[in-house]
Image 1: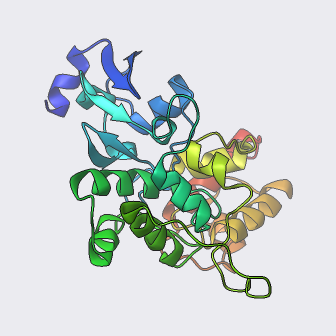
Image 2: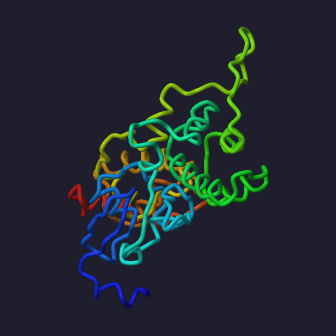
Length: 266
């Protein structure tokens, strides 16, 4: 099926986590349909460009970035999201338990993508080497852990090795279960609602790796609150103190202009 075929399909039938679902817009991004139409917000969106891997799901058992897959391409296919990894009774899968035990779920943005990529790996290769794990996770970016805890968790799940509790006095530097790990690993965690500026950043793809995003957002908020207009040169001057190595600033400027317009600035 090619993009040329998509408009001819009015309703797309997709099997999501074992349930047959009907999606209305074949040209919509799969990631958006999963989150907005089906309420499966465990799938995260970090870039809308297929770069960060946070939105990774399994399509017919193969990992894909759902932000660059059209719904129409999934007609009759099986899609598995992070919500479909645990057992029906809520018991975590071995891979999820390993992530909890090793503290591999930090902020939670990359966690669904890491889990789905690791799941695909372990299905294809139940006894991966460390290099196999690194290769399988290479398409998912994490800014929290340096990847070590994640890699260790996948290897532990493969060999079903339980993590021993550290002895008293030796907890510093040890792998400890995160108390908030479970909701991050099941897709149950819910974030706060986005405001107009944050939504504009999301829609315009203004948040890439995320390193500069908080600073950009705060500078943009101060600019808009001061009555700043949707003027590219003025916006660039307002955010000049924040360096971004990902986007070339164009997407960020577009996002701020959208938010400024929506606030009534001219």
